[in-house]
Image (cartoon, rainbow, N blue to C red; front, side, top):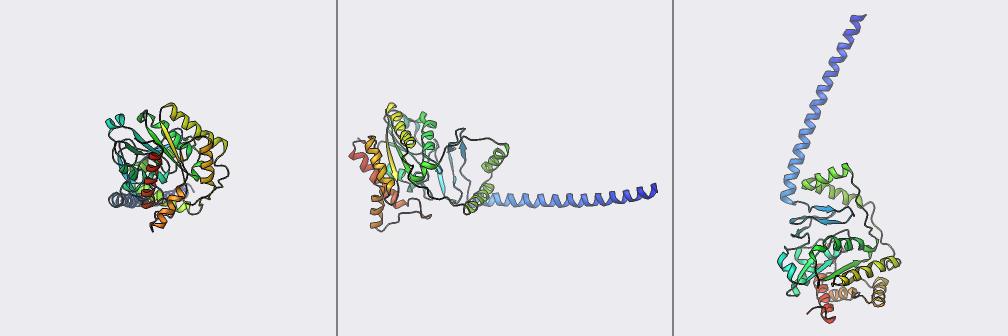
Length: 325
């Protein structure tokens, strides 16, 4: 009986070893295939599409680009951008001139950044092309809300000086984007590091995120609470902070079609003696009458034609208000 049991056990052990051997062989083959797949994917992605722009996240939740890079951005686009030596979009900033000349700094979201546009098609770029003797900086960043923009000023405050002028571009949705503290998690951190180093993984993740977002489209919220007491105070306090730093700010309330948003913004600015541009729909109408495109390929963000016309409108506002020498 014992001999029989030992024979049965021996037979079972041989089968187990065989299966383990086959499983290990299969696992090894799978690892080799996936390794080759990712190596080829990485080589092709880097050479055809390029690297994705690297984003850093502060403990406050405010995100910003790592300086000195060129690559593509976003979840549903592979358009490229140049991030300069101070983490803004465009060509490098001369740090000596930054200390000596007046700077005009744009704070905003993807509209300011220039979503799906080249570096030379954003309205900060066109604005810089219209003036001499001043440095223009584009700190626009996709996904920003009002609190992000204020936090961005605080983060880069070392770059600013007395006499600098700021332009904060506010679209309706910016009042509904919260600034949430960044919560660390080892799994998230590990995947974040993989994405930082792999263009292929970043591209796959971007496409997956765009596909996922298609099943949960964001809905346009009511504008009824945009000019709440809390939001109004944030805008007023920020203006006062810059005034104490001997700096100026102009708020641009951006929309393409006239609505209560522009009307309420004009009233709010007049009541609180703020410098504001609230007539952007008029600029849009001018572009349309000239037979030019208003939107870029996504049908939502500014086209290069609208950005060029908007930059002229901003310059006119500055000159009429005596804000430019």
